[in-house]
Length: 388
Ligand code: NZQ
Ligand code: ZN
Picture 1: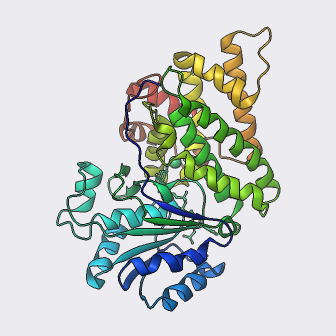
Picture 2 (picture 1 turned 90 degrees about the vertical axis):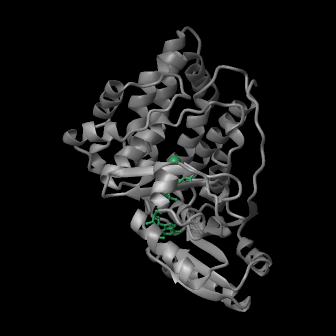
Picture 3 (picture 1 turned 120 degrees about the horizontal axis):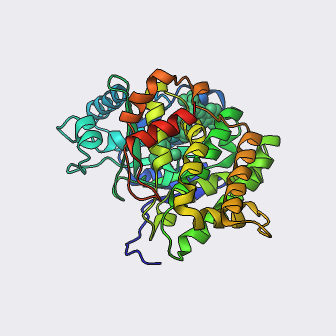
């Protein structure tokens, strides 16, 4: 392992089916005004809202409602959240939901005391916060993004067809996150599998880079095996606690900075997926599944040794009598079978992308340099066309 790095994770986690009670331990650390952030109402239907409000009231908090965070939160909603936080002098941003609510809370947290326009400052100019940051806590209801233990915040701007993520530092990571796998039971199956693929792809994005012998890759392989194993159980029985708890825990470790250590990391599937998302507003995990195989099949020759290892270690491909290319190819074929089996979307047409959008999507795709091949615009267009 040749990378040089520092490592700290600032988020305290409470995990398990009794974890919500630990909100009582966290709340006294913050002031009275709590901005309660949630989405389109799933938490009202499944009872999580009532349970959280009861604990907030028992701890004497003023609850400031901030509902309606949409999947792929928008810049308009971000501005609204900042206004609510300013008007109410909030002491804690408590996100109850999936990655969208957690990301949004982080984006609000760095913008409340900042005079600049948040979109321009953080998502166009990629500046770091220079103002006071309001603390964030998360109660997670969907496993996938890893937002509960990282500094990432992704915001969409429909006026400009942009979806951009800023990975903030440890000071923006949630101070605490509560992970109760049972809270994910009410997720529609499509969201569950989108989250599962998001997890798997986060691991791939870090794994498919570098050629050195790196502990991070062994950790990544173990996580991938666990995700595949548990996903097959969860699609059959979404209320299998053991499988859902493993999926939730894997999601956190897939993107809490640990397995990126010592790696250049790729992230091109996410860049492609985010650009597709900017045009279609489609579910994040599905944008990734729809572009993954055309991308990986294209870059495979440039990272053949790692793709071979992926086939052998994650998919148990039998190597006897086969060339490295054949082994690597069979690994991707096995991945494709698994993706189809759990019900992922395999092309961007189903997400609403059309041929005439390809040029624009390619223009909005950030080209990163950490993977096995730095793509040209023409290559991006070809990959997107192959994903239609
Ligand atoms: O809004 P509600 O009513 O809560 O419904 C949500 C939403 O419709 C629903 N849902 C969540 N938990 C539920 C539930 N429905 C029933 N029961 C439950 N327990 O699921 C839908 C999707 O929720 P969302 O939060 O949008 O999903 P996800 O967790 O996948 O988050 C997606 C956002 O995170 C960003 C994505 O780009 C996207 O904007 N990402 C954030 C990352 C990070 N912070 O590091 C990395 C990721 O790669 C990703 O880009
Ligand atoms: Zn993702």
